[in-house]
Length: 144
Image (cartoon, rainbow, N blue to C red; front, side, top):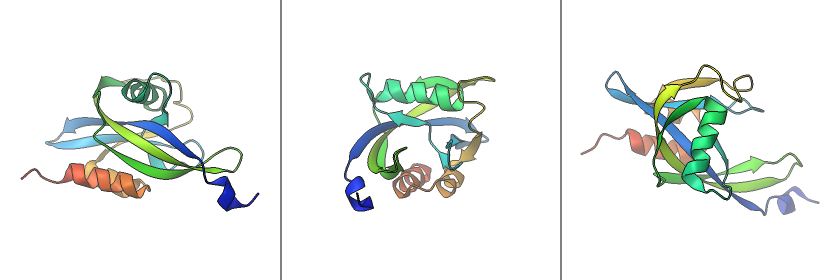
């Protein structure tokens, strides 16, 4: 099977955008992906419970955070996800802001990921997905 024929599937994911206010600016928490160690948002496949609840669960499992998640997404982006079988699926990701109340010392994927706070512009420079970069830069724009 050619690579082109492997990448026709599409998927839906939901992500949390964990944030806090510190030093007069908004900071976001990114985690590393398990395989490539790229900086990403905590995210996962949209399951039966749907977007916000799933994004909140992923934030706990991947980043060890608890907080208040918005019920509506603030935006979305798409990226090509490589699956275990070598196929590629284009994922549409809905992004839900999550106001962080607590950073846990221990969480399910602690040994598999790193987590770090970034300003919005720093986070935009750290991630690789074009649509996510645009979303973060738009959030960083001063209100007029």
